[in-house]
Length: 450
Image (cartoon, rainbow, N blue to C red; front, side, top):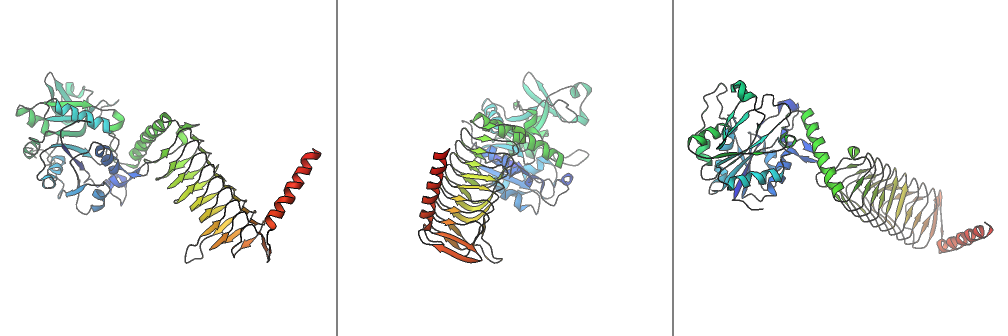
């Protein structure tokens, strides 16, 4: 990565009325992250000297969505050229190049931005991102001659031969720092809308003898999002990218089109993902993990070799140890299920620890909330919790203890104890080991007969 120092200006002052939303357009999410944050992340990978987000008055949350960015306000909105100029005070003392991006064009890649920076180093004072859509429709056309980009012609002003041009303007632009604001300040608003158009920069630069160039991007990556339908289209494109990257990294997806990934999903090698699995933000999966169909994971960490689902839900704060098993219709929240532990059926584990190699039976619930506060349940290593048990927190089940099926446990169970609480409490000290000895003997006898 080699380029001149540059600043990024992200234009995000549009109200997005077609979204029919009280939320700013660029704050609508793709893969669990606001659109504008995708733009910030892509350009951030190139280490810009500064990032400025241009918003309208009263849109403070927009700039806050881009880490490290400073805000500039365009008030009143008088076009894209005017919006870029609104960032000038925030760039005082910075004399590098200026890249202009759009907060509602979230799919432009770091590689394309790098290509624009590379084109600048070859002498162009202005670099414009172009694309070739299947249907050029009413996009502005890029007129290219022997000396490079000559002008940008808006569709309504284009002659028939210019409308036949397939190369269109994507809006993204890179300006040489030595000329950037002089060019911007030369833009005039002598048009029907009385606005200052950024596209006029090309004509102004050429009139001053400055070279202009075009870098072509893929039509999908320059998709602008200004409606809910366009948001869904952008999501589909981004999901295809994320799935392709995951599979290239060693993940098996049985039906990729049904798997939803977040922007920060981390998947190890030899992970197998069955159909209809949803990853919310903040999920990290180790190697050799199997995630069965219809599971939902969010802000969870899963170690190597674990098995999840089908129909499992891992909520925020879940940590699964190596070879842990979380089965069908099991929900885990703010809990650690340690190595080799099994929670396989119809169970809720919340605000809890399940120790290594413990086994939690079907229908078990950690009763962690009393309407006022959350309380912790601790299940020791090797413990066995019988089916349909209610563990009323705060409570601790000791290592190697057994809780009989159908129990409601309100007091701590000592290590190695056998506890059955069905109306009255029955506790046999050392009973767990005696129970296991009898069970082993019975099983051995049955095997001998067989």
